[in-house]
Image 1 (cartoon, rainbow, N blue to C red):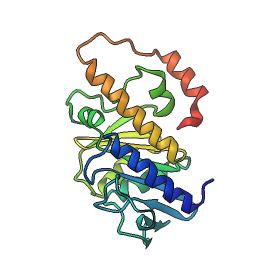
Image 2: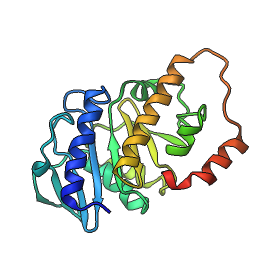
Image 3: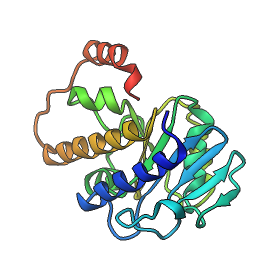
Image 4: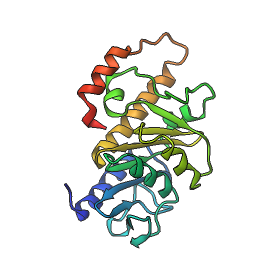
Length: 213
């Protein structure tokens, strides 16, 4: 278990890596990490490429700001994941290009946005649900996530982008990267005959690698 200072430093490092590789642009995207009595969250209107460790928002377990800058307006959706998934230690919300593209397509399956075309998307991400559109920062998005009852580690927000939870900060970031890479494959392969993993293969992967999400 990393201490708070180490978590802050690692949030800065991983956020910068995501930004520099194009997973987030401008001030889009936000990251949070669960603490024993609250959470750390990237501040509102901050760039993932230029975070400062001591300005990262620290919230108590009620969502009140304790220290640092004002948190992202998407704090509601992060807290909803922590409330419904006790195994979640971090949440990553990006506007990555291909996952966001899938969230805009009319024929994206709302119950299974990311079909199992590779083993790693099953292992790291699992089944992804599409949630109805809400304006950014609307508390209703927290309700949509809570209504999933913790059954999904990742979602696509309609016309907005992906949100991915993980057991810790590294797991959440790696899962967000895997989701984007798989979304890129899906967009690239649109109109082609695609071989999906079958139910037995998915079930085996889910059993063997359940600790990755």
